[in-house]
Image (cartoon, rainbow, N blue to C red):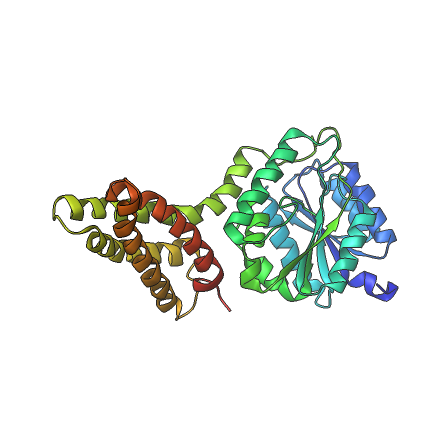
Length: 345
């Protein structure tokens, strides 16, 4: 990266009740000729002198009167950057607690210049003396994220990221006020047409990560609820589908294939509306219903055939065989809906 472009790299640092490490990081970044945007997330008068010291050094500072969360602080910073730095090449987000070195920030910025259509992640290796909540929290989250999105990343919780200039307005509109915002960004990558590029960075934990305001229970639940809403629709639809299937077999005495088809006709409408408007926020365009029902027709025909034929091969009642059949078809359907039916162009 040429030296004349360094000033167009904006490092965005949200900070809640920071210490002198934020000042040291700001000084080092300014010495590298980078632009620094700090967001005081409602720390109050006790911490105002630290931000004022950074402002006198040349950093830009935005202030929240009350604590509003990391997600809101990041979006406040993005809004300020869009207004005051319209020619920014990219925005690199970093933490204020000293976990991200200046060298790693520069490497992530360089990768962003080389990959302008990707979200660049500074990914930690999680080897050595890593706090338990950080090691296992990342393992679980990256597994669930891959299930939900179809995208594999090594570090879903990294705060060191480079956002392409072309995506800043979209990033400022993404839902989430606290730590769930960063997961929401990852979940929206396909919709935004962005790829992912990862840069290995140093893994640093100071005082067993005591400076982090991440609550492993409260904030992890916010993150996982974002992901598990993908499964909520399937559970509700399954209950409707399975109850109606048994009712039609038992009370109406219909053949398994006919009961399956009628139950699926009703539950598919429930599933479609929940998926589109609860899970995928209305995405998919005007052809979403046609694509969904084309998928449902194939899935329904295959499922009806399997519940009719499998009991002849396997000594299992028709009502019981439906469970493994639906689990397998759900997994396949989930991937198709995620990547095709409810994906905006």
